[in-house]
Image (cartoon, rainbow, N blue to C red):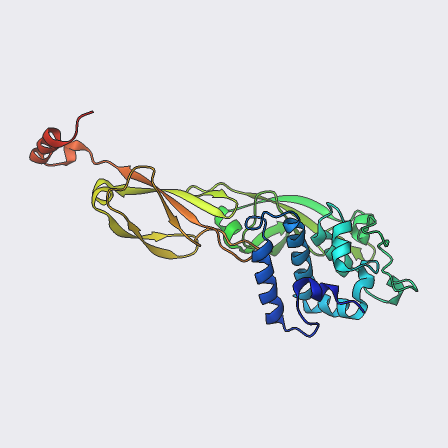
Length: 296
């Protein structure tokens, strides 16, 4: 039986969960599209993520160990992902493992009946075929989207808690199992499209965050160490002397955590120098400023 999923991650069939995770992180960093610009790196990155999605889940891994590549039409996992074209591999994998596995699901040749030997063949879940899924939209706070956490929604008078993964983007979807339409013993799912509310503080660019940060004229001239609250935690930041208005200070690793790689983006502070009002200053000091500050 082929071990192509294990080959994809470069691990042995008896690899521990820690070994699987380490292999995935190493390969994800190597082939991440933001890092590796070589041709084929993005496809390899998707293949690695799909393999990890299966092998990191004990139930899915057990099914794969039992049936092997017959789940993918007898192809190697590499060929299967390549032939799937632009179809989202996560959706395909989810549909495969949502089905009830049994001998009746496989033909005599050992091939999974939902796929042809030349790749994805328009496989749909029984819920989609019966159109039992419900679709809705949900507005969530900005910080919940980037940090993740539980969120309660009212569904037909029922209070339902859903888990928001960290690093969610506007427009991404969540699937809540068993909360769709009913047809006999079958129940569909609830598909939630997230609408992330605007933040009063942060702007987001993929995994990076930025925010305007007010500093006094004294701090701009002479520098200071300031404690700043970030979504991650409070951190001490050194503002250098002679800082300029609009100058950026990078806080490495204080941005949004990427769900695929586990790597954090950065947080950029954009300095805004707040000038004091002249009438709040000593008259003699104002006179000295008038006499000594460079003229335009």
